[in-house]
Image (cartoon, rainbow, N blue to C red):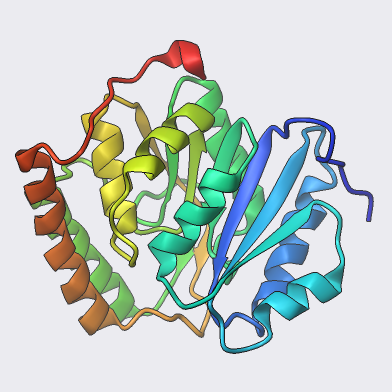
Length: 256
């Protein structure tokens, strides 16, 4: 496999992958990313953030010994939001994507998000709720029901107009990423909502893009417990904003 070197240049794309006990799923996900990127003309880097795993996740990534991949290991399990934030703030790319370690979204879908950013978006997010002729979503009915219910409440409370806040496939310009992730408070699964809330309040343009997605067994999300925690956090985000605890910076596209 021919890899693009990212040692001496600023990569166009940084890919951040949070991983907690992913020894069974991380290898095929990385191969999907690297097989795709090796056929592209742009430079890239891949950052795996091991979120205090109790299995061999980090060891497996290191043993794969693939160029262009960096591994950061958190001492304890800090949460998905904390792991993604760590990787994004270490990223060097002009465009920064985070994606899940399960590979539920085929990595080639990144082209859809890159195109949206090329056309002026500051943030491009994959969506399982929006459909296109060339996309399909395969999931179980109860995940769809829980997801739609949670998203409806998020729309009503703080973030109208976004059909799917939770798809783990999101791309940011470097400026937007450095801004919103530096102000992120959530360390858990609710961080997606917080980032989009901050991005919108800061004036960044958000594009929601239909993507292909397949449910992969082994999710770490407890649908009932974690959904309730995330809903609690939504009220917290609104309270932080109303108190003025978020330092909101208006977007300036000249810095992209």
